[in-house]
Length: 469
Picture 1 (cartoon, one colour):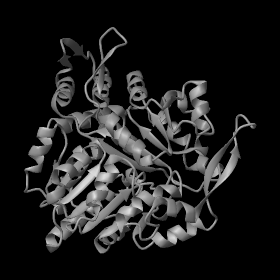
Picture 2 (cartoon, helix red, strand yellow):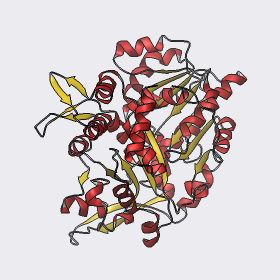
Picture 3 (tube, helix red, strand yellow):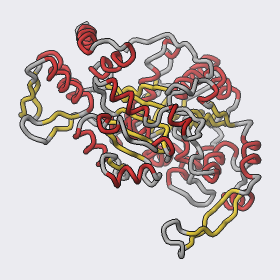
């Protein structure tokens, strides 16, 4: 991967200064605002100044395995920063830890307890960076999950000088989510040393009638009127929020690419189909008899599957896009996400990966999504493009898990929750569109067509020309 010069976006120097100037702080910015790149440049700056040390980044599996190492290889200013993922089997993780030449080590939350138990008495990391830090919201002083308790054991280790929390939406479920996250930054100084004290100071209880059965009631927590302003005032010195509305014209959707990289057999099969119109998987032959057929098959390989000839079955070739979608859903932190797919197999695989998601082609699924009962909705652009109203009331995030050539369907799909619809609903918020893109595949050619409005044929030829270099 060739490195590119890093040209900071207008809001990124502010983010960088916040991290460097505050050894323990939180950076709250939506996906696509550049949190990973900014943090890596902050780590590179500390290394250059000789005041850093080894850094540990904690995140979801895909983030720990791919995102940080890929980002470090994208920019020229990070040439001297080495990233070592600590993932895989225990043997692979132990081998990764033995690489004492790395500057940044990345591990998934599931293996955090293992790491702390192994290194607690000789903790080597002076910088800790929890990515997707809202996972820390469940921490309690004397209880909570084993992972948050493990992190609590080393969060204030004498060797830890920097603790930076990265998150998109830290409190989408309410202010109660904040105590567990902030505790790691100040040991309970600002919001209280115990969750119960935090709750008693700013929250109360009230009895609510059930919406379906008025004869039933339940108890609901609620923040006191003064809670929001007081909590924000206490946190403003260590928490920086980067609001897209301050930097983008919310009249246009904010479009971000989420790249995934095909490796191993997945990449080999894709390249064979692209070059030779033929490949073989597990004894099954896959062949394209025209350029159009090859285009469809290559896009299917990019999405992670291939249909078995003359059947409705398919063979899965990779799960990279499912993992990327999981990261987006996780960063949304409970906010509704509208997911567009093109292939039926993609719908089936997503429904299996996200059992709480609903198929918007069904009356029940559409009603559940529009009412907010389901936070993930799967829709086909050809059926979702026209005549579907009301989605903007609950959703401002769209994701394209599959890429395809139909520009009108794409535009109409986005328009279901687009800026105009948001305004009609009386909502002043940006619309985010995420394209999950398999790098060096026809996915990139499809987006080139969307950006430039070139013909399908021209984009295909340009893609083939690039891939032969």
